[in-house]
Amino acid sequence: MSETTEFQNRKFRLAAPARSSAAVAYVSAFISWLILSFGLTAALKSTSPYSALAISSGDAGAQLTGERQREPELKPGEIVAPAGREDAARIRDKALAALRAEPLNAEAFRQLGRLAQQAKDEGGAAADFSESFRRFWRQPDVAVQLLQVSVNKQDFGAIMLYADALLRMRPDLLESILPVLLAVSDQPAARPALISTIRSRPPWRSAFLYQLGRSARSETAYMQIYQALKHTDAALSPLENRSFMDSLVARDQIDLALSLWLATLPAGTLENMPLLYNGRFELPVNDAPFNWALSQPTGASVQVSQLPGEGGRQALNVEFSGQQVVFEAVEQRLALTPGRYIFSGRFMSQGFRNARGMVWRIYCSSTPGVVAAETPRLLNSNGSWAPFEASLTVPPAKCASQILRLELAARTPSERIASGGLWFDDLAIRETP
Image (tube, rainbow, N blue to C red):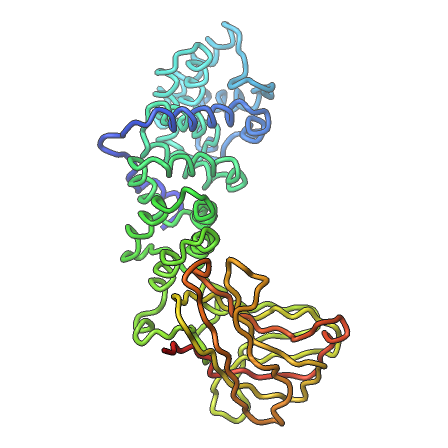
């Protein structure tokens, strides 16, 4: 199915749009600014006829095409180019002649809409622009005008229709249109239309969800979108959910972030869910909250690889190049409740050389510079696996989440020089009495 067919087949209208005057006034003012701003007006100005006009074979249709080509550039603050009375009559006659010859001529209705708008006939302009859009929706200037009309009428279905059309035609307008979508998402009555549009997987969906997830007021809207789509073929992806979960974590809403993350895991993963996720590195590592986050610092390589000679089993491998490195490249966010715990694992060195070795440290997220637990220094295992562990007490306050991080135990720049490699496996956390 083509994008045009998919777009035209969708249903957008709501039975009874609700009203929230303050929010609608804000959105309306914002869209008016979009229309009136010189930058967007210039961006929407077409320098050549739209491709659909190529089907015009009659003289009237060809003359309308010429009218579009002769339209002057708009000045700052102008919505339509001014036309004198004689010019307006001439354009109207050509438009009506084109419609008699071609009732589906979108450009004719566009020109009539511009004339009605210039005459301050808002109802007539809206009707003409709607007819033009219905015949050929790929007209950015028409869609902007109809978006303004829809906001004034508080028709949320139509708002989503025209915003979606604009972003499909002009992805470069995303930054300008996003505030409109975010303002609409604040309105409970608008969310059914928003969810319907999101469900169609428009090309701007992920970018919008990213911005919505970062908003401090996003919880209700985002969770409503998530709940509405989670059992459909348009469910939000882990990548789309990530910014929202990160935003929740940043605001210490750990329980909600954890619940949302758990819901994104594959079926069966929640059975016997450990306190430390993916401690044997057999599951995908994707930087999502509560999974491993790996980075590649200068002077070191970090990857999950198959263990040599162990039948394809995977483990965490860290290799150093022999230069000075600031290493904080392996970490996982935890959500341990207050209590006492033991963090344990095993490591194996392969030619690893460093003055003080490596350590696993656990921090409370609210006090990132204070070490809550630390393993013994891990330096040389003589080429075989060696166990390690550390005790941790999570206090009842100001430690809603924790960070487990692998670091060099360096205190000075010279102690950050490392070479060779280390393997880590069987990492786990267990609660103790």
